Image 1 (cartoon, one colour):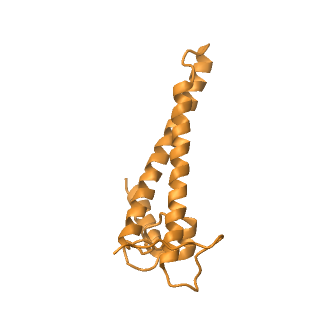
Image 2: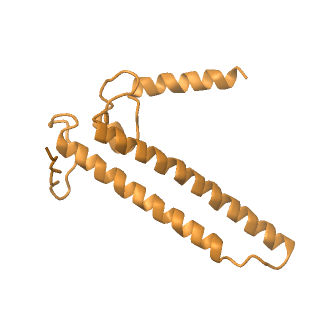
Image 3: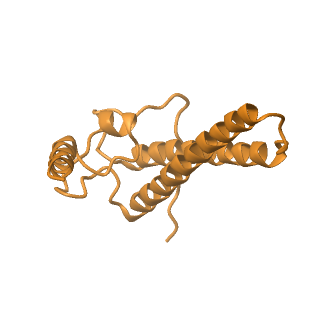
Length: 142
């Protein structure tokens, strides 16, 4: 049995009036995540290209220090992108497995507004708040 991908109408946005995580909504979020991932991959490629083509032997020490700071910032940004791309890929797997849109902790609906704002969300708002409180408490106890 093959799955058919629903065709989304131009300008489609998920609505509370529809069945939650209907095939249309799932396709909407799949496309949103895929476009986001592709943009991050392209930006990472540009960063690598910029670092590779940059002339290494710059003039004085101040200019070299500035260049190294800029390179360090670009590499940190690229690392953040790499981690975000990994989260997007994991989210796409959840989508394929039928778990997307539901809290990993409680099984409750995460909600369309939250997913629209943060498509890689894995926790509903209540669970996210509990997680943040635990993280803060662990940080304060050190």
